[in-house]
Length: 152
Image 1 (cartoon, rainbow, N blue to C red):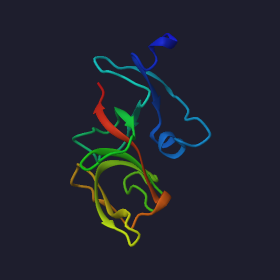
Image 2 (image 1 turned 90 degrees about the horizontal axis):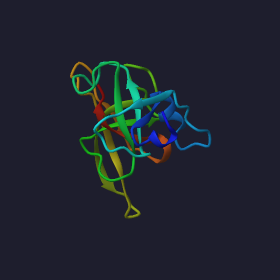
Image 3 (image 1 turned 45 degrees about the horizontal axis):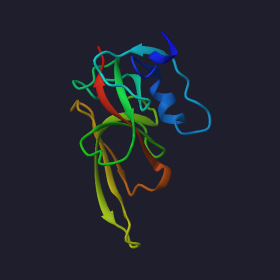
Image 4 (image 1 turned 90 degrees about the vertical axis):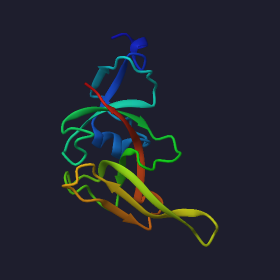
């Protein structure tokens, strides 16, 4: 692979844990390797990671390599996202990060600014339960990336 192929034909492969816990910090996230992605317009906001667990089946089969796009803001309602939370852990993996479907309820604060009253992270597999975060503030919760698709 040539340097010019990076982010044009190939994307970096990261561990989900490394991306969720280190992205945006001073130390760079370690690249495990590079994987070719065909028939897709790529950019530097995209990466690949292996998703472990059955909670997002059938959307994301256990052990699938998935394409993600780093969070850029905007509405996330109904999207599958990679999140890091300091307040709860994923019941399936026990990690402080998870890949789940996002939904939130907002309310206006006394200062006129809105805040998240409740964030619900839902598995697509109904054998698993929602993760519910209430009265989320500051660094308690961060959306790292948005799921794009499962790669073959």
